Length: 320
Length: 314
Image 1: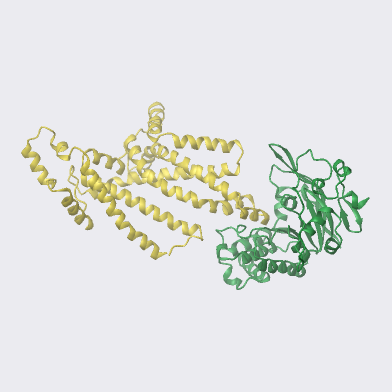
Image 2 (image 1 turned 90 degrees about the vertical axis):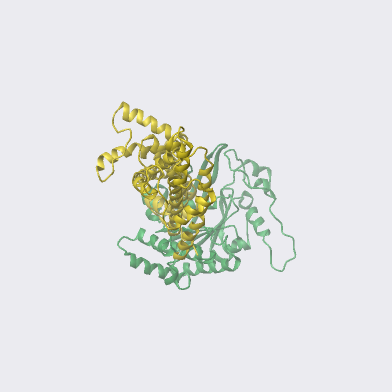
């Protein structure tokens, strides 16, 4: 399979009063055509910043370096006007909280057909409305002919997320970035939305980046996974290997802190807090919390390396 | 919606009764009376008594109030004590000048306040934003009577660009009319524009931080759509509230501005009526002011429902 998106040595820094924050520090990952890539990590690990970099939506203060190749074109070299044409058309995004992600003063139909009209010159309003109804049918919204005239406040959370997905699909994107799309939803609705994403991915053959902090969601949905910690990708592999044979101590820790059905074992949480990402960091960023830490870990920054084919780990113990 | 409007209009009745009662009682508390003003202090007691009887002022306040009320219900608000003409006629003769003043002031305040408020929000940390903050602070702090006087001093008396006061009806001579209106409307409009500007800025800033604005960006909207369609329609709701309240201020401000610029409007009419203890005239002007204020706020509430679909009235 061909690579649709390739993120190479991506760095994003933000100036603060206490110095530069290195929110993302040399991140690499690939998304193949027709693949669902999961990005897992805790809050502040840089997963949302990665997705916003792909969309070109990092605020003006943020400095972005590296390369984001989309169909072999570097998105970071594009102008704002060129990016605007890609956003919502070739790459689209859905967000965490469907309750606040739809504009309260426009109808659902208006918001979805706007995306269609923005990117397809020559489409009439009527055609856009028809396409909107079609999209809402695709995402499983009942009686879309009537619902397009409704405002978001009349929709439940699950329905709003369906509408958000329909909006993201409006121009049949090649890549859908889903930033914690189920975090704000009930468990039953979560399952429905994940099912829907998988189904749509199969039907339309696009690629999805699914950002989440929930390993359960990853196991259910993704083909491949990148685990992020403190601005780094610490492990990247296919989903089966990740759960069967995790290599990085952080990934192991994450899996150990998952409850297992039927087991009465105590959960073992990862001790401590992630480091603050100022310039003066040395050594492995996980060292302070790592149960296998050695003197070497504190001195040298770790590099990511392939341990077996397609399995990348950022820990010298697993490589050397 | 129709039912709601009807309900609000019915609520007007107790409000107006309340206001008229308070005003009636307040007037009777003001020391000095119309007889002194009409006859002077040297009049004979007989002449004073005759005039009192003539005007019906010898009756107790309560009786007078009910008499007034009885007539008012039939839309007869009495005659001005000074001119003898029906007060309602006097009021409507003065209304055009005030309406024009208020309308122009409002237009000026919106034309200045909204665009600069939006600009200040979009260019949040730039010098434009700071200038807007300082100017709006000044605008709120400068008293209208001072600004009006200064404008008359410099623009009318020194530079002789515009007339210092007076009023020519619009239909008689539109150009002279507008010339006379520029200064008073500008004076009244500045402080209001400052308030509108601040509100627009903060409302826009809040909306720009909302999640749905990120959705709009992710959709690939143009900056124009982003600002004016997605953001401004949401920001308009709090701005509208402020505008509604400001209209009350506009009516109050009109009293001062009309006095400074010698405009024959209802504000000045009310002031003269109070000086001269012209009770029926005071009564009707205050009543009309409050009627105007309540109606404008009803209108604002109705516009709300059109802008914000979450607001529905039963």
